[in-house]
Length: 170
Ligand SMILES: [Zn+2]
Ligand SMILES: [Zn+2]
Image 1 (cartoon, rainbow, N blue to C red):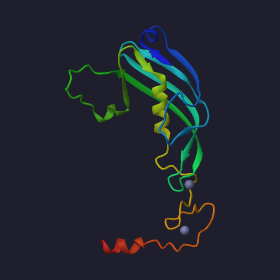
Image 2 (cartoon, helix red, strand yellow; image 1 turned 30 degrees about the horizontal axis):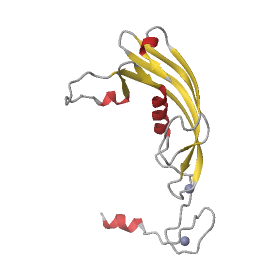
Image 3 (cartoon, protein in one colour; image 1 turned 90 degrees about the vertical axis):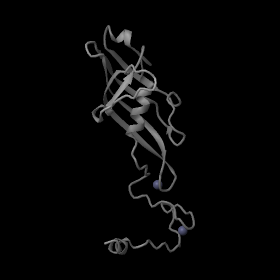
Image 4 (cartoon, rainbow, N blue to C red; image 1 turned 45 degrees about the vertical axis):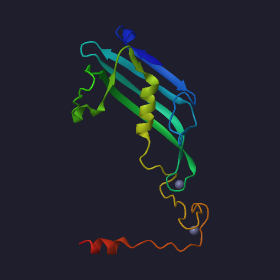
C-alpha cells in the first residue's frame, strides 16, 4: 500500500492490511508462517511536513535457532509510532549531518512512502538478537553433531574453566 502525500494533505489515512507470505521479502532464514496483519493510521503535519505512522502488527515467523539450527515458530507483536521527514535536498557528494537524536527519524521523498517497507523494517527490528528455539536450548554437540535437545550423546565435552582464565588476567 502506497501512502500518498497528496492524499495525506487532505486527511489522515487509516490502514488495515493482511499480507500473505511473499508480499514482503525477509531474508532467506525467515519463513513467514502467517499473514502479516497490520493496522493503524498515517497523518501528515502540514506545518512541519512530518509524517507520523502509528499502528501495530502481528505475524508468525519461522526462524532458525542459533544453537541447534532447527526451525521454530516465533510470534511477533509490535506497536510502532514513527516519524518521517522529507529527505534533505543536498547536492551530490555533500554530507548529511545527522545528530544522534535523529536516528529514530526516517525520511521520505517525492510522492510518499510505501507502507510495506515500513512494516518490513518494523518486523526485522522486532526480531530477537539471539534466535533461540527455547531459552535453554542445548544446541548441537560440537564433537558428534547430535542435537542435544533430542538425545544425549556420550561425548565428553569439557568446557574450559573460565574462572582460572579470569585470574590469570589479573
Ligand atoms: Zn535450539
Ligand atoms: Zn556428541
